Image 1 (cartoon, rainbow, N blue to C red):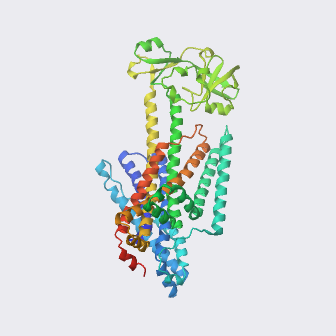
Image 2 (image 1 turned 90 degrees about the vertical axis):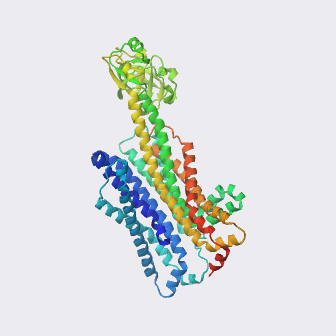
Image 3 (image 1 turned 45 degrees about the vertical axis):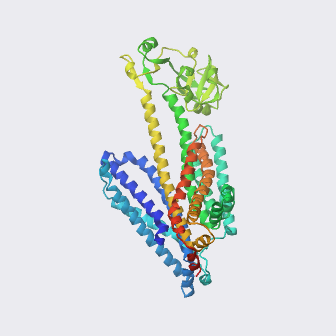
Length: 591
């Protein structure tokens, strides 16, 4: 069983990957939807599968290191009887690759078996797409082989003298060497330079040339990759200071102090596990922050696009509409305008201050109350294109006007509002609140409420899917925590027995192990927050989203609490195993 712990995450990732293939097959069979219509959705799923595979590979690499470290005496004995480093490394790689192959086949088989249960939910059972199954198995096999290479080569360098050692702990050093320090610092510097340049260029650009957004996103991705690489490289040296900082409350209790010492006593292992957790947390936090920011912008944009329940198109009689039972009736006129001879657009003369849901709009500069004759209200997008702000003068169809306010997301029914005295012609429509059935016959009516609700539901569903898939990725990291804790308990059998001998009860020893597992989650969450929020801000700038970043504090707090609970829960089974250790066992573990 111990040999399969390193590839448990690979099995889950393979299950996830092939489940995505089956989901596409089920959708096409059950809903008769062509694959071309699902390209964007399954491209998104594919991106999350890729992330899950990367996390699984990192978990496997970390766990392989622990398993091989526990077998150090065995490997040293093999070296002592004549096994060369190359032969030892090859055997370890073959062992890891074979277990990875078995795990990937098991993952695909489990996904196929789960697919047989689909008819219970009223859908058509999927087939068994053979080519994708082989691709998933082969890809997982290659990934496992790559994951085991570095641990195998490192373990093969063991000296024959290691066979004389009685301790199984091989991870007590937090020094990382000059090369890793230099490499880590270079990565930090590279990530920082890219972060600053993206921020400066993104904030300074009002009108972006073609390809600039893609370039900024690419640099943001490279910067984030370098930052994560620096975390892995410098992690063993940073884990102790981070632990000291966040574990101050725990040091008030004996169990807490022992848990901190246990995690800090194996810095390389702790750094590997917490880096994987931090990757998952940073992705979730960045997604939640980006989604919350986009939701705020989307709310303002929908307030502009759908500012009332109904839009009635045609020459309207406001009094007749009010008599029919409609409320907040606001007739409007449309005028084509050209601003500063550069941008031509349609404007209306709606009075924004009379809208029912005015709170959904967010003013960037100026005030809506400053609106009057020879004044204009612009969307932030148009204002940034023209370099205008509240108080600026602009030429509108040959007339000098003052910008009264700029509004995030857009103004009702367009990007510009004129005062009624500056608009000409007859009303071409009206906004009103009430039921569609109340509108007298003869008018073209658009239910803005239905459109707005559909947009909101679509966005909420998309965010829920993204966060749900990222949580599945997070679960792979939690599996890594459980595997690491289980192997750590096996490695520290003697220590557990000694703790029992000096008076620690079984329940206290069990709490100690679960606290250590929870600490992996807390440290990873804190590091993930430190990385995720800045890069969410950078992604918002890269995309050119004209809306202030909004961090969902409550959601972030829930993520941290849930993650801590999950990682602590991952330590429950290892904790039960540790609690069964007796003081006599400690004597047996010495030899």
